[in-house]
Image (cartoon, rainbow, N blue to C red; front, side, top):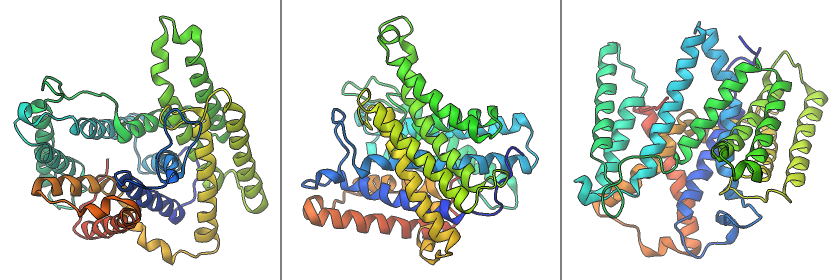
Length: 395
């Protein structure tokens, strides 16, 4: 074991994950609605600003960081060797990268060159993903392996026939890794760092600073305009990793029993962490303006500070005051986050495939905003039903 963590399921983390997914579904859907307020949209890449929408992705990263110590220590407690643990981490990373790769390329598919409509290709991709990463409950393991092999074969086939671009010559390739892929890279680096520093909170804090320093170094002219400009290609991943590490550090503050942070000690440590994040963000803002699109340090630090506040409130309500009944609504999504993440896309492509479309009124102004909120809630109910059917994805 690396850390002596609180035993059992942490409802406040599950609730934070579920709420984040609900908001994610809402903001993704409302992005297609015209005539909505600026604060409901992503800030433009050239603006020195951010909206609550720009905090959703880093909130995912933050939650990944909060979960990493529990995941790694759980596998060690089950008897995983060092190399078996590393293989598990690499396998999860590869899964996220593959999913991100397919999702990014879907919108650029050339139906004529590929030989099938985009909606059908996308639905087959999601079917393959579910077959590969579903958690099966068959008593005979070989049945599970057959389903997984079928899904893997389907993904390989879809990758081979894929053609994109206007001229239909583009193959399946990482134009960028997509949200899931970016989470995958940050997860990989954070897991490596967590093991290197042996779960020490001071080591994690130091590595947050190292990630920020790496970003700053890669954007210096003597690096950017030299033969070492390739270093800058990882600057975005460094910032995303820093957000994951922020979540990891907060998780250690709350749940590492060896730190023994309780009562006023916990409040002062968490408050101090929040202040450091805000002050660092303010100090870095003149040099690196706030921008989600460019993954700047100020954006990451302000986002992490927001997550510290949100989780602390949830922890107080759920784990301290035991006001947790309301979290039951979010639990299905919190326990099955990957399926919940891809489900809106599945519904979207299914509607296209069936030739169905929503009334125009739901694509504008207040009706569109209300529909987006209703749609997000409906997705959580749908996930709850799929959970009962034992459709649960796990990388």
